[in-house]
Length: 398
Image 1 (cartoon, rainbow, N blue to C red):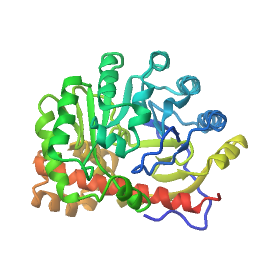
Image 2 (image 1 turned 60 degrees about the vertical axis):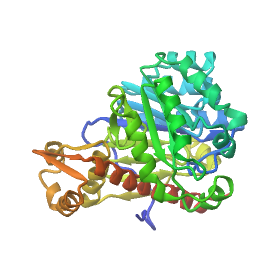
Image 3 (image 1 turned 90 degrees about the horizontal axis):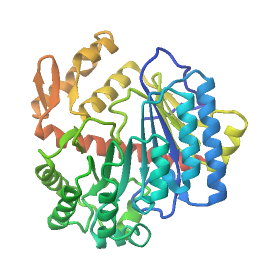
Image 4 (image 1 turned 180 degrees about the vertical axis):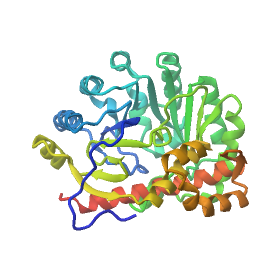
């Protein structure tokens, strides 16, 4: 996908009233994981405080532009790296918009009494904890052991906050090069013992920019084992958990990490954020100091944008809605004035023939085979997004 060349980046003003999500990106981390392609930087308190002030300025810009949001999702990076700044930022979002649900990402070492109390005061409904694995060897390979704790310590911290939030999510990764079926089974045993409300199990995703770093620290990724591991995860977690997406397992209905399933539109705020509003996909500057300067001048800190064609929007919806397990044809017909079949019938037919879709009139659902097909599709989708992030970073001034 190419972004606009030779034109000023832009997003359209708000059109019809519809549920939108506000994504806030906090790019600061105490440790930089080798596989991560998100915009992130080693934590510096002075710069981080300047950044949070800039993030609040950007929130005000969207408010003044006429946008409203039903949900807020704070990702990173590590959003809880300065809990007082995060609390103030969430308070501004709640005072500015009709926020009805709030989700925040964090790391295991931030599950302290002070942080949990602040998150509860801020009205956080869902806390997503980046665990990745409970295996100590894997944690050491990822350079997470010393900073975030052993698998046993992480397990105990998660147990200690069960029931504190409406939803506690454990973020996990499978198909590490050194991970075998026994290692994965031990992680699954630990998860079932903890019993979080939600478990998100991503396949390891490697972008062009992280490939050599992952090989050096974790080893060569073998995608041929991925389906075996995925089926092992499904067999252990279902029926205790139900599918919220092809790789998210929940005990109850709630927002998921892939908020793009539940919200047709989302604004991306913060350095390196990507948003999708009114058919326009856009990216903010990846240069943090430039981001601070632009918001200081009252400017939207955009670096690139692309207007989606009708066909682009319909195929994007097809991918995202089925990632959430179901394609509601009534909603698609209403949204696209009955035109979606014209653009989608080759895709629908192909997946029906491949055994990936089941038709229960009037809707389409993923089959067991289709769930893994969508894991592949979404893995490749996010790898492409990560490659785009790498491209954006290369275009930015140092």
